[in-house]
Amino acid sequence: MAPAIHSFPAAELPLAVQVDVDGKRRRTEDMRRPVDLVQDCELSTLFQYECYIDHPEMRDSRVRCWPVQRFFRQCQDKKGKFTVETTAWEGPAAAAAAAAAASSVTPTKN
Amino acid sequence: MFGRLRSLSSRLSTLSRPYLGRPFRTFLAAAKFICFAHLFTKYAITASPGQGPSMLPTFEVIGEWILVSKFHRLGRNVSVGDLVVYEIPINDGLGIKRVLGLPGDYVMTGTPHHDRPATGHERMIQVPPGHCWLVGDNLPASRDSRIFGPVPLALVRGKVIAKIHSPFSYSWLENPLKKVVGKE
Image (cartoon, rainbow over all chains, first blue to last red; front, side, top):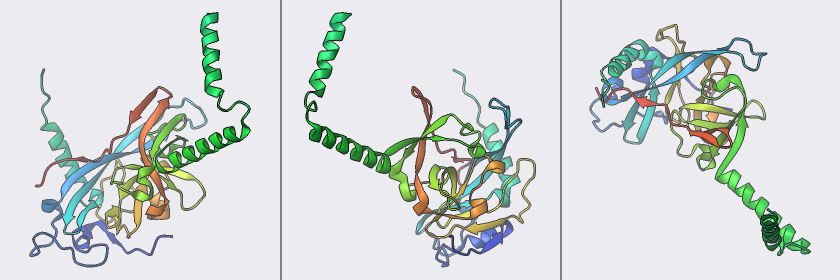
């Protein structure tokens, strides 16, 4: 059984990441300023899905899936790397950034 | 044709000669093979069938096998985005889920939706030491950490490294977590 865990709203994420898993203030390379999720942490993304089977009782039934994009920030403190899911904190803005990054990649012609 | 059969039977008799009429030696060889197979599948690599709708569309509901690296048992060298096989904490079965958080990481406890943007009120937690946060790829059909909370790393049996479609067809699985942009 997992230990009792404190949960917090996603809007408080920038404050919550200042404390490490031992409850101590995170030590960054530059001790004078706190961890900045946008400036210090690289944005990554992966897709999960909402899939529905039209007729579960049939073996060859059609399956329809809608992608759900999730966002993560990979940060570094003096103890090592840690990952912060930012889907709920910056979802729409990150999706726009991801779309812009994808559209800026021009296909090469051979 | 008969010549080939004769040479095959002579080869087989050469191979089985050390064990013919020697029951103890045969038993010892079988025991050695079973011990080696047990060690290999427990600590190196194993293959097993997977079924269920919780990992759609990464895995079909039925009919696919997975290749599992036991070098990653107990969550060793597992990263966010990897697929793991784990002992389900609320029953006796094994499951396959994606790792979304490791000890000290921050994860969303609820479910994001494709048609509803986040509001900022969604609840989040910091994954406690010695635990991970596992979520199935098919969000509406998966029973995972969103239901039973963080999973002890001790329950992680290994990392899924390949999908086997048939005895002669397989595909390696990559971690889908990709960088979007560099440091801003």
